[in-house]
Image (cartoon, rainbow, N blue to C red; front, side, top):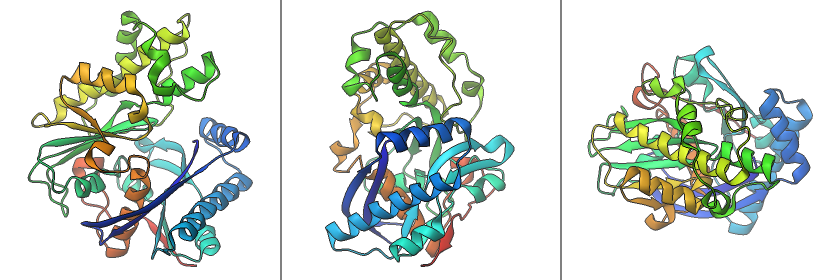
Length: 345
């Protein structure tokens, strides 16, 4: 909820032909607070939706201007304010028709609804893009996206883009949302820069055990989470800021370690993306807990800041090509599912 990433991608919806320019538009503090309130309350007014869409248009047009490239289509995810697939509900705010009008470019949005309505989890949606990224890489391999919620894609050598066979994907548990929230509450920062606060603390093993005693971890994949699925305030009450941060980092890493039980074989390495890859202490903790190579997207020659934006560009092209976005092995949907809605300017 700190800003918008925009990225250009050349693709036919299966292979990646080229990566293009990317940019980030930061939200100002006031808008970030309003957006945070909408996520907490699960309610957004028309003015917020319009302003969010206008900011996305600004990001798109800034990228067009700086790169000199006008894309054929924009993939617009919007901001999730509610994700409750068990009740067949997922809400991403943002006006696709308005974005198409403001940019003059066709827009594909509403990527998750069809999957959820059909009985899927509606998340994660990036596994098919992860497969394209790792097309030439030795397998099996695991791509770990550490956003507010963390999700993993395990890919083996037999992965197939039509059926999704060879992919295993699901949310592992909290990513950095709980850590960010804790830092904001206890020391007033936006995040723990590099994990320095957590690195100065000590993991509270008793509190960690209680955090891991959550029914989510007993569920088989595919499975997904809302950003606010885990409530930790009462469990961390009385913790120092550093000890609370250290405990939450270890919690995130232990959640990832538990994910390995659902892979058919151990990955040759883990590739991290998302904002969490910038937390050095989290990556060190992952290496300790997993005892396997843990790399950053940049180690593979990928732009970790642009990867999510690239993924929804890729999904927009798959929508135009009539290709599925989600699969029984990634979201639990009954069959490979198309998704998204197209709005023309």
